[in-house]
Image 1 (spheres, rainbow, N blue to C red):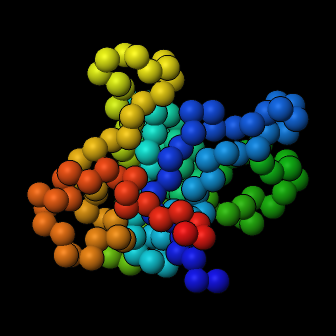
Image 2 (tube, rainbow, N blue to C red):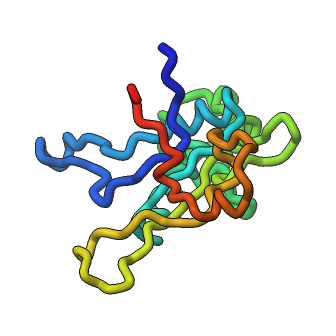
Length: 176
């Protein structure tokens, strides 16, 4: 189609729309599969621009499970091979997979290192307005040097010029 998968995502404050009901919500911050595509296919990181430490913490928690697997199968101490309740009592115990072993296989990259969230994602936080005139849930775009992993870096700009560019001037919009 000729449209690149974005590397920068502004994560909305309200990440789910639940107007249809609490069990019928729509994810408004879909970056998971673009992040996988950018990392595994393009060998690039995505940058998520978030409004708070809490938002980053929540995203890290969910992303850890989708990328690395459930915590009970990946903890160094007290990890388990499977959840007993996931299998019927009469299920052949010899046929139960070792999820700890299988998930570890997928967490280890070609270089032999185990993946971590920072392997795929950078986080940048909106800054609060200094004069506090803004709405309590709004911030201003972060200014400063764009993470080194961005795809838009063509090597022509000096570091000094890059540090004065807002991150948003480096974001390509779909169809633009």
